[in-house]
Length: 265
Image 1 (cartoon, one colour):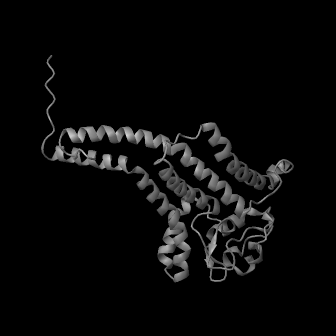
Image 2 (tube, rainbow, N blue to C red; image 1 turned 135 degrees about the vertical axis):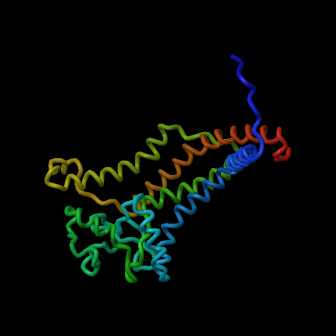
Image 3 (cartoon, rainbow, N blue to C red; image 1 turned 45 degrees about the vertical axis):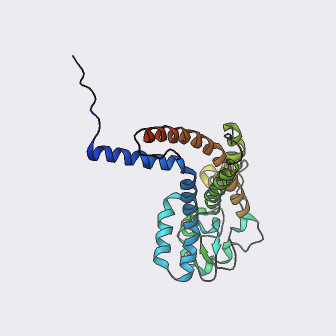
């Protein structure tokens, strides 16, 4: 049986294929700019939310809070605040120099059913998630301190990577180094806090000796998130760059061959 020769693509189909190839080529050529703009937006919108609340644009602000709610617990005691008395309102258990959120709870309607006892964290968690802020305390960012640091330092890391790669080849961070340096601090801080909360319940009270109840500080959340975000860039961006460089070169050769790309590009 003779296989019929492959017919060339013509007309609108050819136009569509070339358009998609050009689009892919441009993305492969400028992927770092696209990534940096994305993470700038993704990290910037949570900061924009309290700004909008402060100036009275509550509808778009609440839309941002709602949009980010599936990605973060948004607890007020673990988030940064703008335009208020303090930059953050951690729980008293965190042991910071900031006035704890417990000092304000009696005047906040969302916390009417919550206890100031750190071991009774069930109702507190829900209330802290619902509370956006007020004129006295300011308004919280749409993601917590740790998440904001992660997204922000992915953006900062992307900028640093863009500068450094112009001067030298940047190799990827070894996976083991990422696990130890990038994931180690954030995992230790986050999971020790989480397990300590479960250990404070009657069901898991036998674990209290291993995981005493603790609350992380704003500094630790920010620091561990920043390390994770920066190390994540170092781990992944060199791999992405190598893969998309091959795509760019392959599509450039193909588009030049059919006269759809100038030789100088």
